[in-house]
Amino acid sequence: MTERDGRPKGSGGGGRHRPLGRCDDTAASPADYRAAFHAARLPMAVLNRDGLVLAANPAFGELVGTDPDELVAATAADLTDLGADPRVWTAYREVLCGRSDRLRCTRRLKHPDGHSVWVEVTVEPQTGEDGVLLSVADISDRHDLLARLRHLQMHDPVTRLPNRALFFERLSTALEAAAFEPAGTGRIGLCYLDLDGFKAVNDTLGHRVGDRLLSAVAQRLTRCAETVGDRGPGPGGHLVARLGGDEFAILVEDSTGTDQLAELARCVLDALQRPFDLAGQRLSVSASIGVVERAAAGTTATGLMQAADTTLFWAKEDGKARWTLFDPERNAHRMTRQALSSTLRPAVDRGEFTLEYQPLVGLGDGRAQGVEALVRWRHPQFGTLSPNRFIALAEENGAIVELGRWVLERACHQARAWQLAHPGGQPLFVSVNVAVRQVWDSDLVADVAGILAETGLPPRLLQLELTESAVMGSAGRPLQALQALSDMGVRIAIDDFGTGYSNLAYLSRLPVSVLKLDGSFVHGFRSQEHPNPADEMIVEALVALAHRLGLTVTAECVESAEQAERLRRIGCDTGQGWLYSRPVAPDRVEALLDAGRRTGS
Image (cartoon, rainbow, N blue to C red; front, side):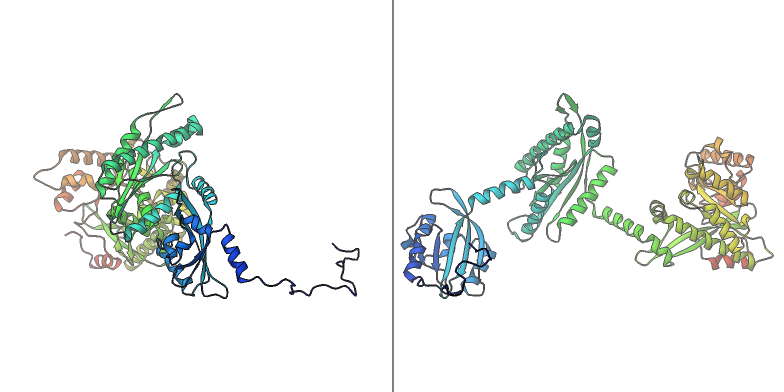
């Protein structure tokens, strides 16, 4: 209590009070400490520096089921299970040796009446004494509560399976144990799956039915894991977990090889193919499964899951409702593809691309009339790459716009240089491939007009090639762009003609001036003794049709003089292929022009 002025009572002038830090009571005697030690309900024992019991109180004797006097000289670590865990044992020895101030750990002890007790063991040096005090607190109730909370935290409420957190915890533990456990196989396996078409169930029947389906699927997966584990050569006990959504995983510790995982995957597919009867609904689902099996040494949880995810993608890509085994070679190809895709844009800025040119030769006179510009990637890691290694990637990630603009500009500069170097001769036109994405994602007409103005190349000396599948059926912006380019004087060619839609009626309405026949038609012209009359008839009809429409025809992949002669007789205008020249550097084309010779002669 305080008085009205806020000062404690008795704090006035003459009042007497005890100085702080002073006590009139006498200090507790050793006998008092011993009495408190023996009367305490907390099990305690005093140890020497060797870990032997010097004294134990009755509560400690009751805990271990032995009279306290009989515990003298007993090894405390044996009584409290401190030697079972190497890390706990090391920390315990540090306290005994005086190099650590305290050890606190949780142990599971066997009570004399047979049940288990979870305890918290504390070991710390005695103040002013040479001994060590060990105390044991019963935390069974708290441990059980934490265990229940952990179970809720680590299990999926819909399927009651272990969830993603518990799965990765178990996976990491399994990898660590497999790497150091000599009795096991040292290998690990994983089936990673998701349900095909599960979203449609949720969308049409609702999430309640979807949850019931997931629960039923979980039961069948668990039975498969138990069945294959029991009859297989491995130890069984496979972990089935729901990772989220309709994704599940079955972890096989100490796997015995791919045969074990394959059997498990087949069991899962067979089990899920049987219809599910849920709330009056008969549902059928399938699953795609990625299977990975490998040595645990050198494997990380992240690496294993990446491999499983990739393999699951392959299973879906290959048609779904199947299992696919991880293939290192296929994965290496995918990784290479991704590495190329991610470095495409910077490679343009670094100047890693170059152009080679392949002549387009008149079949009547054998002279080069033009060249096709073919891009090459001088990759610092993978060497020189041809277009079929990276053009599709560039179209997928949009880098084709920047790369295509660079190719167009470089090719036009080169064609103009040849024209200026040979003012008296017939100038070569240059043919450049264009992806349809360049039309959609950039202003191709403006790019072409700007490049022609910058280089001074006449529009008639530029030919743009688009594939048949990109041109046929064009409408809206692509068709408008093609028409504007044609009106500018640029020639438009359809590449690989005969392999796509071949919509001949639509062909008459396109601003096209050249058809390039796909090389598959020319292959039938290889042998003079055994010609393919069907190929010859098709090519002859296409050439006649093109000429009636005012188009010229170029045959690709011409490799022999016999092919060239037969194509000439049919009426093809120009040819392109190894008979005349492989793709070459610009200076090689310059040499052909300087020599003024007939190519292919």
